[in-house]
Image (cartoon, rainbow, N blue to C red; front, side):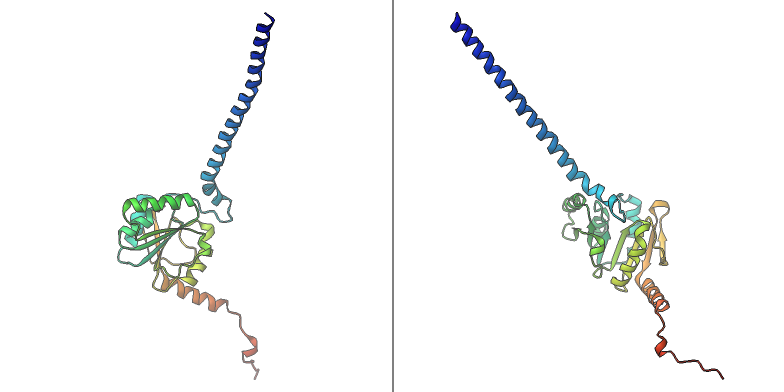
Length: 229
């Protein structure tokens, strides 16, 4: 009888010891799952939230079908290289590639870039559509003859100066949603949020020349002195 009670007590003690261990393992599993979920959510959402923390915010807003058509119509007679600054999900670049352009997109969000690359493969234009993870301010656009930009007012002034100094005089620039502040558009297409403004590089580069001359300080050392009669 004593031996049976001892065996029963031993079994109970074993269960008591094993229960905390099981709970500890369950706690570790739950902690791991929660931690992994948080990390995964951060990895997915950070590229979308980060632009809002930048000095100049360029949020991702997909282009409408009308905007894509307006861009293509504005560039219809043209060909060659095209760049979409802030290419988002790649729809402008892919549409341009289908119309014969050698198109590229620059985008900071890596998820959108990878999605765009996969979409280009599915659409069969991956040979003429390229996507790059890059900050637009760190890229030279000198090689492109056609530029598309979905910008915000805060960046357009600075972007004017960058494009004026880099683009060839044969380039065309299409601005969507917001026009450039000082450039005079060659023509516009669409209405409301679907409006696009088309600019000729010859015009805005000549404007730059006039502004430069106006802002050039006078060298008084080489200015003839005026003599009174």
